[in-house]
Amino acid sequence: MAGKETDCKDCLPPLLEENSDAVSIYFIVQGQVIVGGMSGTIIDLKHSAIYGAMDLYEVEKKRKCFEKVRKIFAHFQKEREEGNSPEDIIKEYSHTPKKQQPMGS
Image 1 (spheres, rainbow, N blue to C red):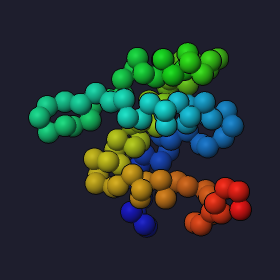
Image 2 (cartoon, rainbow, N blue to C red):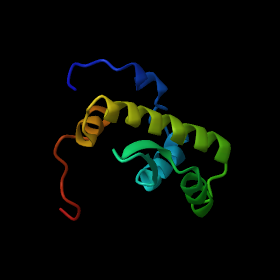
Image 3 (cartoon, helix red, strand yellow):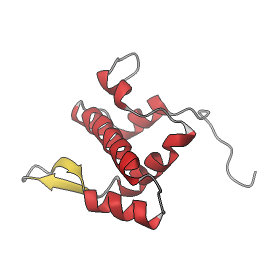
Image 4 (tube, one colour):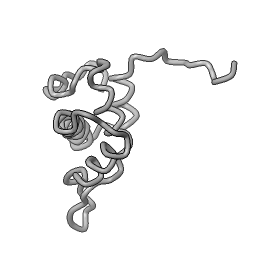
């Protein structure tokens, strides 16, 4: 993935404080997917899981958060379809140092 341009970077909400709810909800529900066919193709996130997580965590602006979670899913789905591993995807968008200190150190 290094050096490879993707068109979908623009569809990801920037990692700003105002998007923290959407990012958190996405990571909570990312495994709650609708799978189609015998091939196990991921089709979509379960919308009920998104709504449930937003209710549980008392997200105030649910519609806006839902739309952002869907954009995040669409981005990562496109990356998966292009054959990029989740580890590669996370590395590209990570703003954390390569090596972190263990907690308690």
